[in-house]
Each structure stands twice: as structure tokens, then as C-alpha cells.
Length: 114
Length: 113
Image (cartoon, rainbow over all chains, first blue to last red; front, side, top):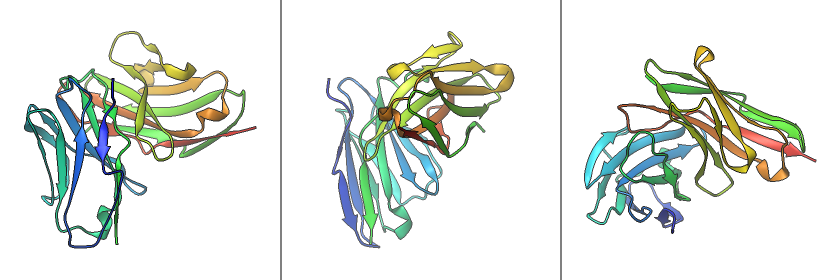
């Protein structure tokens, strides 16, 4: 069974631009979550989608948004990029999002802002 | 608010020695606890999880953790460290009505020959 796939693996952008990251969950998984990982703040929850609906959101500005498609694939968008957005962005999936189901993580997209 | 504290941002052990990585949680409701490992340039891999069944949880690669409610702890152990265990380890908590994982700051494990 293929794992969580994130594309691209690496991305370089400049301040003010926008970026879209993609995540394909494990086949059959309908819940997709996004996390930001930085050396200073550690791992922080961005949002979770289930059946194309956002059902939980972390404490990030509105520049961070996401969506989920009918095939459970998810995209995350960051607009008006800032230097502080440089991070590893991790996507995770699980079957239905029940609390006892562990998250399965992809290898992440490393975003660098110049 | 649910949170976890990992004591020690860096832990160094000799190959063959006991590994002990500490995690304490704060939760006003029964927690669900997880340990993940992250190797360089990779995502997080689940080591084990506690979901209110047995308090001693066995995971992959010889790791195990014990849930101690009285101490609000969920420490990760391995009897004998291997060089391949060198990585970053994260403890995480969630709870019955939540969906997000709250992660600790991580502990970097160094294994010396």
C-alpha cells in the first residue's frame, strides 16, 4: 500500500508570492491533516479536512488555506509569503479521523522563502 | 489545553545501553498518546500509541512505553540502543473530542559507539 505522497519535496519562493502544496493520502483514508514544522516552533497543527470539509483549524493567519477534493487529495495554499513561512510542511492521513487512529505522515514539502 | 512536555532536547546513549525518553502530558480528560520518530529529511513514523487499553504499550523496533496516570507520564524506552535509533523523537497527545495532535518539542537521540 502506497504511503502519503507530498509534492513537491522542495520549493523555493520569494516574499509576497503564493504557493500551493499537494498531498495524496493513503488509499481509503478520508481524513487529511496539515502540520508546519520549524526549528523554533516545532510541529504545529494547521488544519484537518474530512470528506471535503474543514473540521478543525489551528492558530494560523488567513493566508494559510486548504481544500480537499472528492478523491481525498488535499492542497494547501499560502498567499503573500513571508520569511517566517519557511518550514517543512507535513501532511498526514488516517481512515476516518477517529481519535484513536494514528496519523500517517508523508515526507513533507520543504518550503524556503528568500 | 492539552499539551506534552518532553524533558531533554538532546539525549546521548552508548550503543547497547538503555534508551529512556521522557514525556509528560497535561490533560483534563483521558488522553490518547503517541510516540513518533523522524529521521533526517523524512516525515514522522509512528512508533506506538496508547488509546486507553493496556498501560504498557509495545511498538516497533523494540520500543515500548508505559502510561502512568498518577505521574501523567508516557516515557519511551528501549532496552538496548542501536546506531540506527539515532533520530528525533516526538511525543504527541490528543483527546476524545479533538482531531489535532499536539506535539512536544522533540528529543534528539544520539547513539555513540
